[in-house]
Image (cartoon, rainbow, N blue to C red; front, side):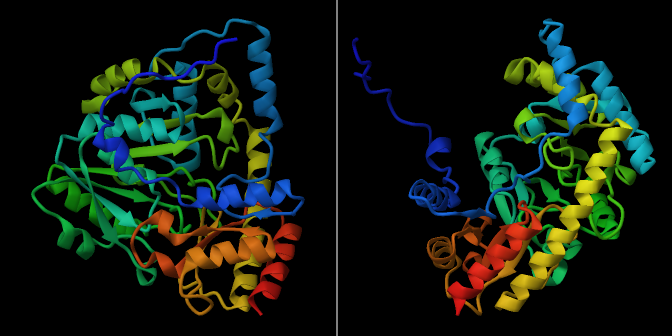
Length: 394
């Protein structure tokens, strides 16, 4: 058999690719996998994926669809029945009337963000990106030749932007702002009043606001909220991955204003053809009452895990100045325990067998002070992780 080898130079690599940094946690993951291969038990608290399986009604819906054998393309904007189901979800859960035509089903929430930015961003446009925040956001902006401008956010403000911060950072080049609520990595939410004020300011400048609500269903202090309650001009991103427990199905959605629908449809046709057909048929069962009952039980359990982890981390010397009210992360200040969170993350992995994510993956806002712990393992494993860390830190 002849082995294939590349025998020619492809030419220069595009700058947009060269300027994207890897997830620094991948270095930790490689080390964790090596330790596991050597027989070590590693507690994974770095991964943003809970340990729950996909809900049984969703699996059953997918199996029933696949049994028919007709697995074909859907419209680029998604199954009409699923778009209507999402619209009904907004009405039933939030009392918000969203027209199904404004809902675009996408290949994960990442697909939704790509479509929104492709429709909105001209070369050189600035986007205000809260820091700390999800790292892919800034690289998606870069992919469309925009500039991701970090907007430092602080624990005193619940790691969410304030109107004065937005006003101070705004320039004539600013195209818009991204806000995540609940956010990754902090799990914090923005207040309704602040979001309204920022939305009004953005709208007055004929700019755009993109609100990431992919952790929306996972709120533990009060009921979930949506930006669509007060701002029909917002671009809102959501996902079937987090609350609905469908990470590997790669399905999300975008709610977009009327003026952008035709252009987004054309982009979706060319970028993706259509979202996964089996995933869409499975997702039709995500809103069924029996599925909601399962998801709400899991939300309760995640809230209990959150409380246990926060209490345990504080007992170890971590500071948590802004408690998470949603998602499944705790963003912990480790400055009393180490000078560098990246070094501490490696130490906890090697000595305690506990994997976490250092702050440098989430921006430049004092990253050396922060570790993100995901409570995506059960309470007994959290207890073991806390005890192992106690021994490593004393």
